[in-house]
Image (cartoon, rainbow, N blue to C red):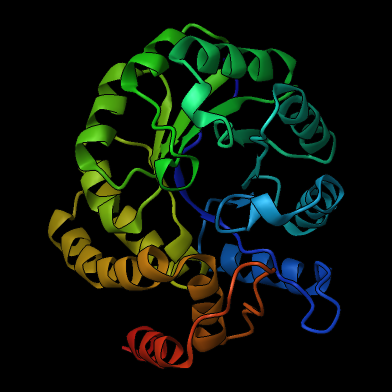
Length: 295
């Protein structure tokens, strides 16, 4: 593969909705991306879990990728979440994402019929999407939402595919990340939990796609930079600051919490409302997370 390897810290950006109309708000979207890049991130993911991907129309997703590409510098990664319930839909989303300028696609497994999907069926799904995708494909493990954990053995089966180049693990389990790293030494392995960034780097992973980076980008970047510079002590100290933000806001409150934290941080970041049926964070939680963010 001639492409550079996906590495560093990326934010799975939130999808900003206009408070009055509920439509995607392109001005806020572009502004958020510009601010996150200025904080030192290596790229962004559009339409990931934190971006409420399951609640977006394909056309909204496609237009968001184009809007982000407009403001994202060429040397920064633009990854698009393109997993879907049918293989056909995942292929269509992946082709559309590539056409709008995505550098790679992040593909979750189908969730609705998860109980009926055997490992061989899942392998077929990933191969079919990767065969059709004009850009490199990343496997996305997020059992919290899909109820379909991806075994390290499946990654080994997919390792020979020329267009599957990495995996994002949002299991929150360090043993699982270690198993992934061992299974596919040639791939990019990215952690999906800010609480485990330091641990993942110690295990030899390439970086992270971290929801906590949507409102604490600089802190995530500093953990990564300190570790890469060989300053383990500083990286460890910074990780201790990062972990509670990830655990209490991302882990407990999901996309609504991330958006509320963005509003609390200020500095021009826009969180705004979530899309129904997701509910906004309760006032008590909003107060608590504002204190966490301020600290």
